[in-house]
Length: 314
Image 1 (cartoon, rainbow, N blue to C red):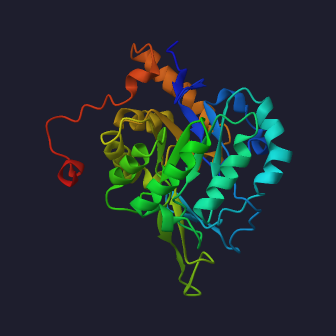
Image 2: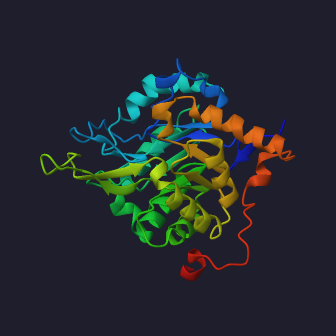
């Protein structure tokens, strides 16, 4: 079979498929439905310094080919995570990346420092791009200087890999990826959700309590692919592709566009074993096409001689 294992910023992964933050809980939520040890890695639900109740309902709504969410980064807080969730994650034979969300740069630093004192965490994904919280979120993610500052402040606090999760709700995502790379990020995750909304025509009111929320699922895949392609051509660090991946074919498209690995998100709500199935499908595709290592797919897109829209931007 084709080789699936590789190292992401020095961390050994069994394959190139991870589960995205917020779609797989803290790992223990899905343990009776799928074996997390068959994944390349788990990215935890976002962690803040103190517990967050998140936004009031309604905060999830289906849309054509997608889902809107306005959870508001509800989470149990870093202290409870360390006490109650980390012991299970330590027992799982797969890589674990803690996702961190915060309202201030100082909070990012404090949460990371608390986690960095613990064993069982392989790296960090820094959420600077959530579109459905009032404090932090896009205020950080749509400002290049803020992304640079957060990365710069966090880098000296850990030797573990630092992954910056970027928003698509900007004109040129490459600028943000370059800023993160310049300040020491080991990788970037591309993309977080797009801003979207839905309206109930019977009541003439927004479906979500917050009016707008984050759009995910197959509907955003073409946008995500374009952002991954743009980012991978702009930086040397690995790009983790996210956005509407529901099959091995979807994942392979992201790898060809330049993603080193992918994250499966919304598909987990339909099938918690989606990531496992996708990883197996990538390996099968390689076997069928005489490819001995899944890494050979990364950046292997034949873009031809045409000039893309991205070329005209850069």
